Image (cartoon, rainbow, N blue to C red):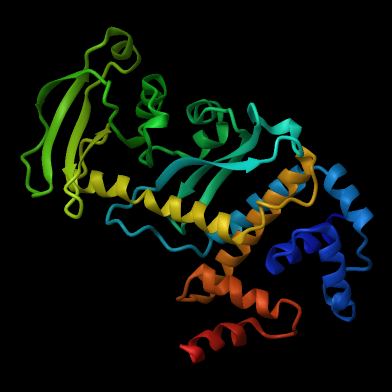
Length: 341
């Protein structure tokens, strides 16, 4: 049954088990506690067949159901403006080509790519798409209807230079979606005026520009805003391009800088979720395990937000792993962290 597969994979995530035999042995030790989980029997062959044959879309759908639940308790982002704030990015998960031949990436290397729209409200992925490692970031962004669904008018989205496609940027502008990105060195433009007087010492330029190259200007015929910002810690200057003409230049720079949170999210995923060792070699098995891993992330996030747990998800992960098969009240477990502190 799907429920038994879900519980078994969640248990593997929590306990860090990376083999079917390890899961069967470890769960077997706790067989007297199965009754409250709805488990009846755990066999490697049954789990292996489920990973191969049960559609991963079941757990993809569960992910979005849990995401709706999480959104009901998530805090807002830290900026003063009320616009929804998102970041778009992608990360590559390396696979052994000889074991996962369907995931060909390079001559001797396999990979799948996880594309995220990251919601800064609650620090959660608003949606996630998995493709082969060769798929370009901008192609995914341009083809996803789910992205259009989340980016409502007055939303703000930041992304790196891999997503610069003037035709796509203009579609965002036409829908009144504000974007912030780094400028490429080869973008040719001319200055058509200063946008605002500079009032922040780290802001060196704040100008209106228009594209010079005819092909680019056809794709994006409107004026853009160029903000140059010097990092006070490193002294390095950054150039940002945006279509938002209202926010302060320093806020534009801060929006792009906030993208570091999605890198922290990627790092947490790699370190804590079992998506480097897979329990099956088929594409369906790999995607099933990743979607269940993301469901576990949402469950942890929901616990953190609902209980107003002040410590990190890393700390919460360790605590849940230590008592996963014990009959303990969740509030007692969270209180234990405060007592230790």
